[in-house]
Length: 521
Image (cartoon, rainbow, N blue to C red; front, side, top):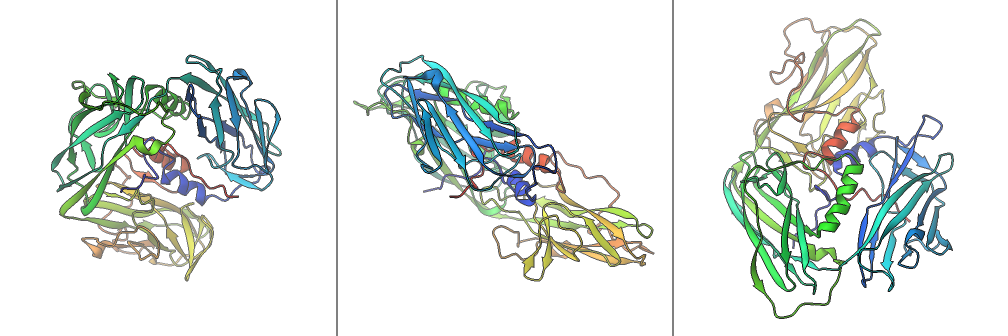
């Protein structure tokens, strides 16, 4: 069985944001004006159900280590109708009064702008007095030593329980550029009619939509979600067929993965509120006809009503075996620079994907390749990207640490044909040396996940970094002119641009629903 993906659109924060967070050393609260933020999903509970559990999102405007972190929940707005409890950390959480849970973290805790989760899971359960249509506010407060507390109000609704069950898994085989058709099915295994449904797509970049339906949203040719207004009767299975095209730039041979996640209309409304709060857009609706669900079968009886408390049955997956041979050429990008003694000069170095294949390691959660950078003679790296670390034999220094002679850099997990990823190093010229040479190497071996070792043109895997060249040395590397601007519709300027990396991790299809869970007991 295919494993539940750990990153995806509407599924958690992407690796790009996580890499930036990991790269930056936590700051002291006294170093800058840092603010905190907290978020908790709106939540819909089924009357008569066991309830649901969720976790808060904890943010800070800059990476910081927090002391005496406090999270408090207050559901007094629905007193007598909703009960709350947190059993995950019984030694850290108390109930000072009914309808309030107060938790204090005694250990130092790191957080950052990308958001953290993993602490103080809250269970909300409707009481016998709760009825469909009840609605109130859950107040979630977040504070820490030296910081002003912040509060978020989440909406809690009482509704009718239904159990949407996704269809079976499927396997396909296709070559880059070919189409294939996959079924989209859902069964209402509850006793109440489901008033519409939403399916969220979790497809690899290579899986492109063949049509753009008016009730579905897209990011380019990537399907994001579809809304259905059909009434789904108890015990009935509904479905449709979707035709996809495997991108001509799909790496082959490989295995590509797609998935769909069914939600009730109310559950998706709750999640839309989260996306809006974080400034994440939902793509654009299609301009074609409407995608509809038609009844395919019906059983004589159904299970007792539930409220999708086991989300595993809301997912279904497909696996595509990509046939043929389709690799790519990653070309190192060097630089040719000049300056006087003590001058500080900028070297933008990295690699370009010359195609024909796009590399997508997002599910693996690792860099598409690894780079080594040799600092030119007579210069000192005084400004180092956060995604680069000193390479000290078999050991590594801290990310962004200046002054080393050699560095290892970690690109993003996605490299599109025709685009570049560059790392900005600031070099100080300590001694003017004619033709001072360094180098950037792509596809270097790494005893870690990811990396690319099937380059179709390894001869351009290394490019020179030249300072004060005296002749036509071709220091740009691979035919590149280092004076030309970087282009491409989603080019990554990796160095120091955590916000851009987060945007690529949180929008442009690699949006993520579940955040990094880095808290430990």
